[in-house]
Amino acid sequence: MTTATAISVQRRPHWWQQRTLSRFLRHRLALIGLIVIVTLTLACVFGPYLLPHDELTVDLRARFSPPLTDDFYLGTDPLGRDITSRLLMAGRISLLVGFSVMLISTAFGTLIGVIAGYFRGWTGVVLMRIVDAFLAFPSIFLVLVLSAFVKPSPFMITVIIALTCWMEIARIVEAEIRSLRERDFTVAARLAGASARWIMFRELVPNAMGPIIVAATLTIANAILLEAYISFLGYGIQPPLPSWGNMLNSAQQYLTNAPWLAIVPGITITLAVTSFNFIGDGLRDALDSRSDLQ
Image (tube, rainbow, N blue to C red; front, side):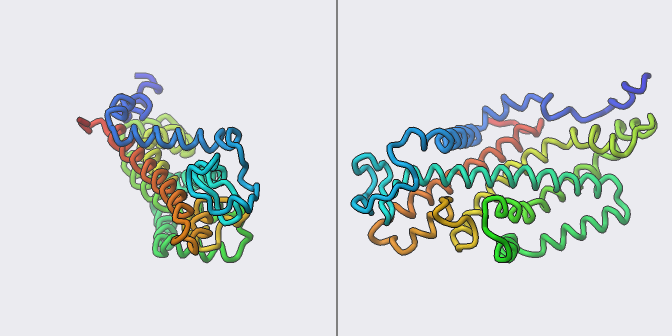
């Protein structure tokens, strides 16, 4: 038996080699969630260029216009700014924060989880106790404390939220790597003289991609919610730069006479977060070869 053959013995099928697409497409809620996210993303990217008003144009004569008034499709705010334009521009920021947090926290959490799961011993114990220490504090409080000491720009908000979202991924990856490190293909790689770095990132991580992808998808929903929370409380994205969270914050005092100011961003946040959760559920089932979706 050649070395290459030995290393591949009893290796778990890679996530992209499984028949995941058909199982995912049979998951109706996940498919609906994917359609909603794709539509919302395209609307946020291209929609502002197609609207008659931009997000900063002030028209005091049109202030508090209800939805479907003239060419203000979702109405206007207290300064007469177009809610539709502001909603889509805010979506760019909120979705960008969500996807950026996902990339940063997934990369860092995967790195910590791989190292802790592969080396175990004192290295694994110390790393996982650090993870437990971070998990002991509610994420929203950690975010608020950190954001109170920095200038609230989109970049800094992304970094702060990422610092509070990597621990769950690290735990998932650590448990998966601990299971995979004793498989025959890992033992064969060690016997063939492969380095620890090669085994971790060329053998183990590709075989753990299924759980990582599911966790990363759910992280986007969590990041969007956290950004909305801290912006709603005034510590996040600051006006005039719009985000879904600070749009809700600005709408608080007008709930009685202009409820659409809160309803529109509230529904959008709910749709985005719910859709990402549906996609995560669909991916979890699709990546599980034992699942039997009806």
